[in-house]
Image (tube, rainbow, N blue to C red; front, side, top):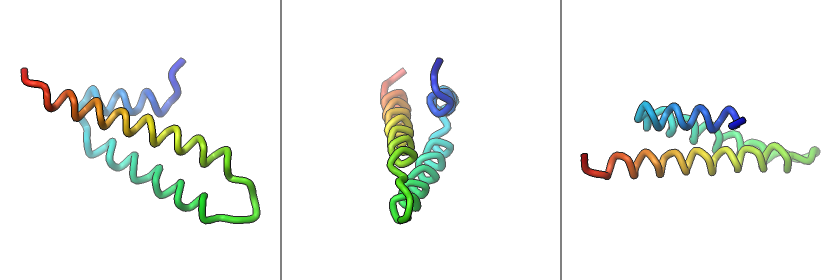
Amino acid sequence: MPRAIEQIVDSYVRLKNRRGLDELMMHRQRLAVDLKSRTGYDFSLPIGQIDEEIAIIEAGLARLKAENSTPI
């Protein structure tokens, strides 16, 4: 079963919602920066998960860009 972020990204791509993908990316990037700046606890697991989600969003943005650049 696909993870929730994959379903969300797929929906944004299908709807051609670039803004939604950009906002999702910015949110994940802010989370990553925040967690990487914290000390006193091992945040490597959530940081790794957020990095994976960022990669999924980047792939979605690439798919959207490829779909928009192909002539109909």
